Length: 134
Ligand SMILES: [Zn+2]
Image (cartoon, rainbow, N blue to C red; front, top):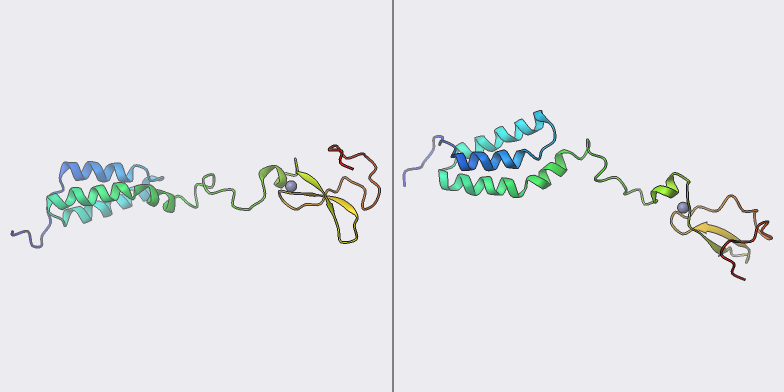
């Protein structure tokens, strides 16, 4: 029981685990920084605790990766704007017949709320609606 203070040698197991924990990180500089931090923490721990710490680092590595790569990786967090991609690109809307307070029929996309600009405004539709109805 004399493990007070000083730095310990980092065990191979802990070193490998921390290496695995940081390998998920995106760029070389960021990865190196976290790897050094982990190794610094490890050297302050007695060997049995090193593995424990390294396992914890490995367990949280995915969350860390997501936090670190948030700005660089747009694909994983992309669609929070609400509108479907096809709506945003104006390629396809899911129009449904709606009635305004005056009882007139118009069409509105159920996905993004956009009014159908292709239909003649209010009253008599020039084209029959594709989904029949009344
Ligand atoms: Zn739409």
